[in-house]
Length: 207
Ligand SMILES: *Cc1c(COP(=O)(O)O)cnc(C)c1O
Image (tube, rainbow, N blue to C red; front, side):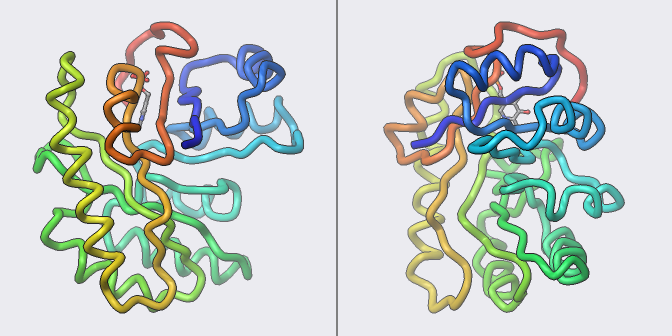
């Protein structure tokens, strides 16, 4: 299991401090904020930047090739755009597919039932490397209420693993945040995205 520090709204100096203390993966939500921090932190060996925020199609060109992993690919169209951009850059972009496990209208992500067909298509994209799934279940202060969503994501990954795919892998399950990462780890999370528990409560703004 690896820890992704959700560093949104955390100043570069504090991110640097955390890196000195052993943090190795920073997860950012917005390109502009991330760009400034990546510059400030520099190309430190061993530090990986992941993108965990909501993707906007016209911003994708800034992300491809700059983030070791994009957790939040919500649709086939986004995967296609990443394929196009990665190909232009002669690179391969590692991604996770976000699944809307709670069926929430306010959130993006693949509907669980639509995922197998989408994965079959993305499997033929030569410049996109699917590493697994990500979920952001409906928030609830009681972490036990999150367990069925985490189990659902794990079952989906297992199901995709049984499909005859060439390039798609299901190595990673990105699930769990400050409030519920322990339950997520019990249910098979390989990447937990933790902000508040590391950096304290920050000013809440719309993401
Ligand atoms: C902010 C954020 C987190 C971390 O949330 P905390 O509750 O502060 O741990 C995880 N995932 C995403 C996508 C986030 O935006």
